[in-house]
Image (cartoon, rainbow, N blue to C red; front, side):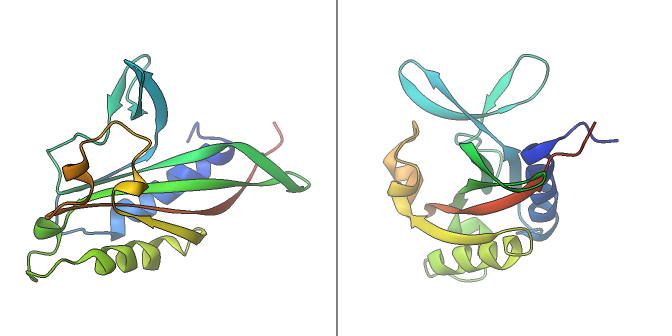
Length: 165
């Protein structure tokens, strides 16, 4: 039985959906929910890995691509126990490794691959590409948008429920 509630349950559903369908023949890790923590005055996206530890997600060189979700801190009650919240999905992709079958820069292909998979869970309404997508985080610019790397962010509203206890 899952301990995920509210938006965390929907993000976990999104995580499992993406991890099973996106770039499955490559080394890809979709972490799910991340938190923006301050380290030495810089914003660093990290995932909670156990009772007290966090792991930085943008610097994981063990994978050809990584992704994670950061929900807004504010949600809106739609009706009853149904809520909606804007989420941002971030991806950092080594295009040469993910799309090794094509030696051209596959920026738009990476966007299309993600949008076609996530639109089953939520409807994206914004795309930011390149360094601008991750400029709020501690990351070297060449890792964000210089061949072979590409960073992008897709955001939109996701709906979820709080069940009665």
